Image (cartoon, rainbow, N blue to C red; front, side):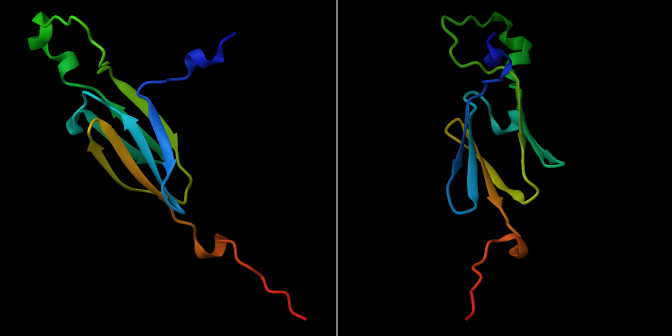
Length: 118
């Protein structure tokens, strides 16, 4: 039984730690424009979805591809974020959507060194 069949793998993405409390989600969205991508954050869930206008464009009915390697198919990805994680910004660079995150840990939750007295 292959349990990986139901795990969505499009579009591919990375999650990288880029600082002490800073992270970036990098998602490969070749063929998508900024206007084709929608991001929402609600109740700690970041939802990134995309749908190209070209996929539904009737003017493209006569277009024939000799080879189509860029999928451009609609997608939706969900990321559950901790209450302390804040989305700082997002940018689309060279076909990669980058979503910058920061984990803002409240002072009372940060670890601290306790001195032992004599």
